[in-house]
Length: 424
Image (cartoon, one colour):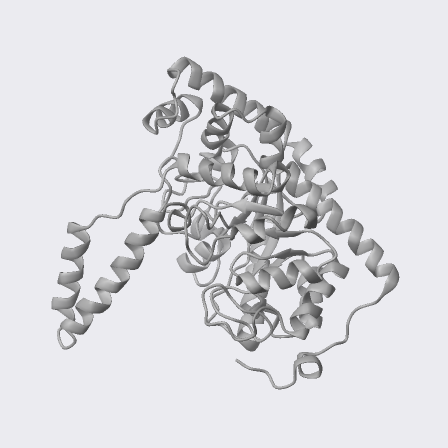
């Protein structure tokens, strides 16, 4: 859904049931929200525009999705980023887990190149950032600080040298796994093999600490989460995850891990993926998948009839909607369990096929900010969630990096030396 400013946000908020004291009160909350977005940078942990571009055009020509003006087929463009009050964005250089080896390394480099070209094509809007100080400086100029996040350890092909090269090109975080295990870490959505991190996986975390890269634990198994928190000398992040206690899916963060985060100092960047926010949506998705498998088995020799039966089932069983209020519920839960200093936002826009009602695209962040204000969050607490928490994490990661580099140089460890035979 496109928005046209504060008036549209008020209408949207009323439709979501957020204007408990009436339109005037909700308008005041949205005005306060927009003001807060000008005082502290909204830093989102995960946006998949680079992959959305690749899917639109395998040549990755930015003109194929010229976000300088409205691009209705996407959730991200510059006008909506401006309306959303974006101050900093980690652009995901995602590649599918099915890509392995040299193909994965090449595709990751191509995705990093997209981010570099974005900042060159639209320099009045974007500027590349590496550090917390960069973000604060760029925010003051009115531009959007642009950072890079690698989504999945398969991008480095089991090579610390490749990890260092990716960091040199601008990668600010790496998600240790994506949907499948890597040889040195278990994923949340694959069959556990290692029970967390292998010895080489621990060395990856230590080398990321030395480099000053954020260790991202979205997508990893609880055992991998726990191992990484044990090994790391710096705070970790979850770039786009929510609370498992409210939506019981493998991609969310269990309470036992949330309780470890205050000592570590990390941050959970709450995501807007409907199936990670609403248990009803998650259950519907699981049921739909089971029904599809059953129907395809029933009509194994008739694809047309199977497709028609699946469409009939979908028409009779429409997907429920996750709501903005439920996203705020996840923020409430993480505040209660881990504390206000350990919450951020990671929308996953353009990496999702359905959206939360009230958070349809990058223009809608102020509506969530207004809801937090309505729930009694102070201005200072809201600014922490918007970006000050992740800035603090980045500053601490940078301090750890400076200290570690005084103690040791680049690791020359290999997976073969530490783990022996590689298990795919």
